[in-house]
Image (cartoon, rainbow, N blue to C red):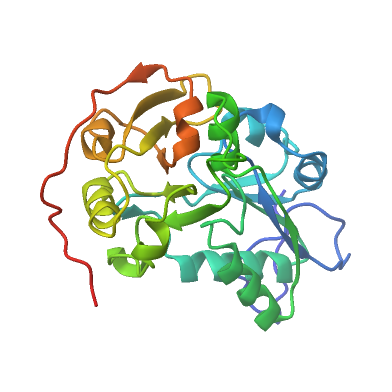
Length: 281
């Protein structure tokens, strides 16, 4: 039988899940990295956070195998973000996390990879701090690490990769990322591009235009660490053509150390004779 709300009690937008009537506890938000997809790459701390969750607010790429590690009674809310299709705006997600925590719930914000590597975890952390809500961060294995490991291609390697840089292929509002292309074009370093499939031609053009050799080895990794992972070995010049074969989420990795990668497919090298995008001065 449903409990009736007292006449003087204000209406609540969110409902407390579980807990004895009249009991009040402090809620908290946990920003948890779910890793690249393989459940075995989930950290022990992430597992513990999931097992204590009242609510799981998760990305669309988080597998059911990982979601099922949360209690059966935990509420699951998908806030899947795909290209040009967001089920919730980021500001709405921030408000949701804060509101649930203020109801006294343990909220797990489950993100693919690591919350602080292009996962907008910093924005959610700021929202919690501004609202006075406790927020804990559990790092996860970011996709670049899994991609390099499975391909047998180290992101850093003595003699061919003295540095590794993570960049995004998209900036806010879909605009072109403001990157130091000349720095990224230097040899003997690895550049990992997240969310760069649709902008691969522009990125390759920028790097080649800034001086990086078109023959530099490059690797495209689709669905890193998952059972359907696919790797295409190519060159920087061949990157645009290689990404045309990609349907799912993928990383682009450029650098001399990618010559060590074990591909599932190998693309024929291509040549970009005229970069379509000019470098900004």
